[in-house]
Length: 282
Image (tube, rainbow, N blue to C red; front, side, top):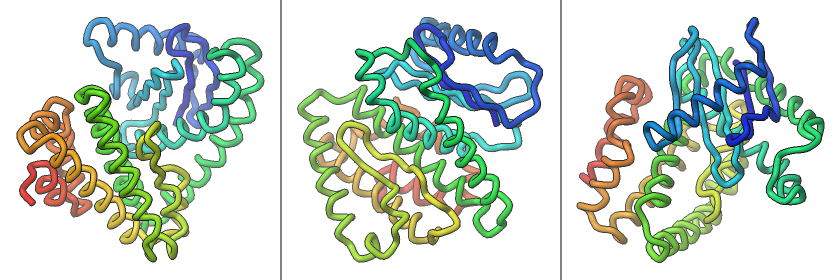
């Protein structure tokens, strides 16, 4: 696995870490990744999400507010959902650690790059945990499950950001905050500490971070994530109506994601759940 954290406008590299043997120049690749991102924005009016290039699978997450581009690359055998989930964990951890620095620098990442170097140890710790979990067959598919739910939640956030006027968006976020607060009061939430790492705020939406897969029950986490999605879709349907929701799901590629990952969803026994949920059958 190789990780870049880049200034999305200038292409300046904040951090780089490689766990793969590679002869590529990290600075040259940093510039190429940023240029490729700008090309995507100009030609296709949207950021890249994933490509296959040079024998590797590349996953991108753009954080426009902070003008950051997070990139991870790994061998093609590693599934997209796993890489997306891992990159999102690193993104959230980085922003949590350095948002105050960005604010202090008046919304800039320029200056002394050494201030970000301690985060390399955070990346190494996460990678060590991921490697440990991958060696355990009984939780081998848990990464897939978390990655699928994280990606679906990202697509739903895109619907709010791109399709909603401020008033509708605020109403939905207020209702989701209430739902999340109620979830936290339930006994299952209190008895499963790792559920605390599925967070929600009206500013950053849902995030799945820091879940220690060795200390939690897969069935409990999966059931909780299903409940979150059911409530989210239900609120969208109540506020915007069935026909608009179906339109939004199509335009923001929820259906494309489900179709393109149907074999994986079948393996995880999630295919019928997602089909029924997003076709609004139940």
